Length: 366
Image 1 (cartoon, rainbow, N blue to C red):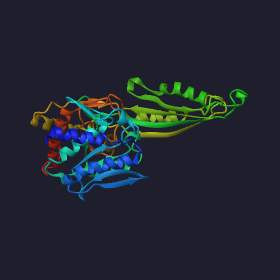
Image 2 (tube, rainbow, N blue to C red):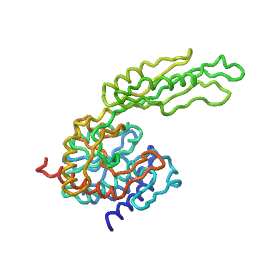
Image 3 (spheres, one colour):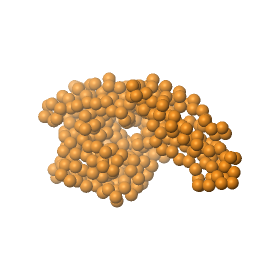
Image 4 (cartoon, rainbow, N blue to C red):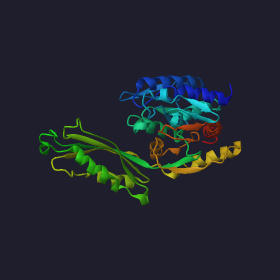
């Protein structure tokens, strides 16, 4: 079987297993599939690392590895999406839910590991809750990154460019509690949590700072139970992104001080800083390695960018591990219906990853 045919076959199999965050059955099926690829080439079986009931997969030898390959199996797409958008390949373009973020990266990882000289020098961690902030996997990620010292993240590229810096992020839930009342008979006895919600949805974006690249975005809101009831409860989820820890801390201070605008309605803020920023300095040495390998193999020149979104690479950089992100393929449409990847770029990334792993696991390079 050619490398292209194998990549397409494996991508089809993995994308066709739906793995929305929290779907233990789907995630277990995907883990079993990936184990069938990795166990034979790594020489050690993958082990389940369960944290608060969420299962993550780890492959590692007893010794500290030279490199940790990091990825996630969960996607943002609900069960049933595959029936609406089944995996397809047309010319160079593969489509399907999760194909870009980040199942193609896992296929690349498996193909590269089958070709490297020293698989014992590589650890692999595939988590199951990245799309919701890695709440159960963070400590595991940090532990394995500290052991390895170098981390390659197989998240998607940005139009082929590797990601050398990422904004940090915070996640909040603002909960409003008022008092219910009949909307027709005596609405004046109620205290509307929905009205309070509206004040915050309009006011929160003012905490952003365009000049510093800090964003504050209300994203999901819920309120009310019935048309004829003054809403007693409401909530809004808030996403915050910033290039510096200082900016995340500034917004966090303001979030914790939120006061009610509506008499008789209380405000509670849950959450805080989730991922610290990933700074360019953490990527410098690994970026140089990638560029050396690409030049030696005649691959397209390696471009590098700073990315607004966060990943688990933020955690690994924060514990001092050298971290290079975006080693997945070219494509677009993460979290959207038009998600796609270039099959040819998958083959290029397999070659790049093989070259980098051979260099990084060579005892002389260490």
